[in-house]
Length: 393
Image 1 (cartoon, rainbow, N blue to C red):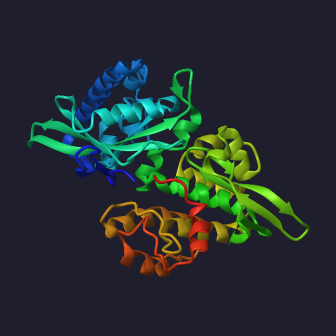
Image 2 (spheres, helix red, strand yellow):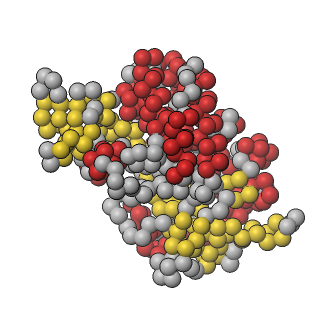
Image 3 (cartoon, rainbow, N blue to C red):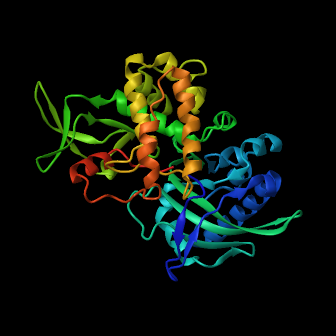
């Protein structure tokens, strides 16, 4: 979630925390102008590596932005409409051609603690080293906003560079969908993370092999086996290979993430979710949480809903064997509010029982420990759960 990044300067070891950007105070027109100027200058500076990251027309049109930044920076939306639903900006999501992964990482490393422009200083990122297949770099830039009503305001802005496929110089459809945020959801008070969580719950439920087991070195890690997963970077992909199959049981082995092959054609992804190709406005609805609920109400087998419901709950508030992602750093009250907005919409839409109370009773007393494993827990269970949690939002 935006505004939660904690980064470190590689050279000085200084730690910096991202802050939320007060859009209503700054005003959207000035925010768009400031960020556009910053990205244009950043693009020109990056050209010293041999090429620019983006065509200038993509910057001007807002095409390079993902998440809620996509509609905040889109010049076709009304300022009052955006400020009404986005009083704060958590982060700035920017799509980068994936072949620039290594060059951008090294470029940023060279600029740690240095000024990009007179009003923008790069503070650092949350990746201590470059790893193969790394899907994004979460950075913090200190940006100076000059506001007539209050004077100068320096904000530690989180900028997420998301590596993705570009086609004909533009982000692919999947690059935009995988990290999308929809204005319809924002108007309903629902964060984009719910859209991706519900897709994960839907796909994980549909493609669970009840007779399947996952093994490593002869030890059962998971049963049943969730054969396909939804991944915001890779699409819908198989995460196992079959190593043995009998009439009663299929035995799988976990693949490494770099071995995953995913379906990213959006019409095919839709087909895998609903066993049919999209018709009429189905594909438009597929881009939002609100629309996804409508599609599930229309096409999903009602018998699957209890399991989808439980999986969605677990993605929001599971405490063990590994805590699920905390969406608001150091703010359990806001974390609960953000998660409840989507969850309550979901259960009300489908007429399901509210089951979140027992989970939050366990979850929030341990708030702030996301990513830390309790060594007393079963290692097997920890690894099994970890297999299904690949992406943060």
